[in-house]
Length: 387
Image 1 (cartoon, one colour):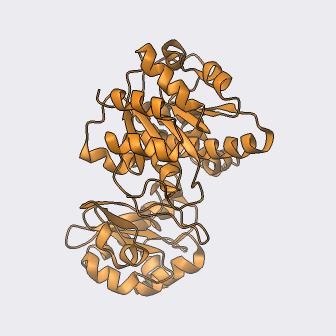
Image 2 (spheres, rainbow, N blue to C red):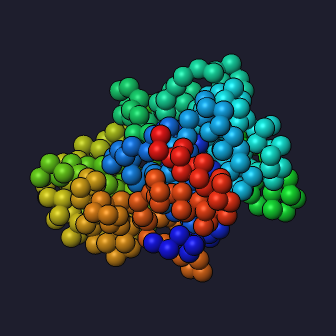
């Protein structure tokens, strides 16, 4: 690899330091590195965990012990060459280690300093431990996810860690970077997963304020309470999804399912769609019965690609091989491992194909050629990288 050649993407040439953390921090780094940023990840050890390779790709990895004064000074020297630094420690930890915002901004007044936490830098819970499930529980997001009459179900760790956390921090960093380039002044970006999850709930909050959003587990249209927005089991034990929210889409679904007005009348309802939960309850068993009569593939043949708003429910083993995902090249091979392709896509500054992280002597060489560090600094970093 030619280290002097910048990777493609709209953030090509932007130098970012990532002080390694868990989950949402590496996801933020992946988003920025996928877009072409030169991301240097500082961590205690560069031992590989293949499960996390999609989150750590496209980086330069360097092992430093930040409790060691000499290594901490190396980090601060790198800060002078960076436009961004972000970390995911609890509030106050970076300050105690000696590389908090005040110290870093003194070394580089234009620096964007990103902070990734669950509860935020302030508030009564700021210093408490927590995970995605706790953060989205506090925001109201978790309460509506699940089946009516049952307990809330965590939606993996997509809402707190990745959507409300890592992606919000990446967005905040790019916003602050634009401002820093305009004004010449850096700032701190406080990205809290609770704040981000609440932002993701904007439409639900609006519905609740307008009195059209039931406040119960699995009670809203978008949580699967309605028969026209839900998943259904097929005859082969697999599942399909229906999202016929608009009247014209639902009418087409009824046509495809060969359901007539008389069929609807059997439920005791004069309308097969709407916001009446009694209609939903009456129609759910009828729809479930119909969808259990054919296999998932048979329903795909009938409904996929139509305006019914339909898709098969695919496993992670199946999704990479669906024709649409293949046509979009939504999954890519990175050194023999199937990973997500960079997203979103750009017409003028397309992103490069993902690569494994650089480390060891490869990383040190990259720092010299891309970050412009002088030889003495490179030699010190070379020694540190053997930790």
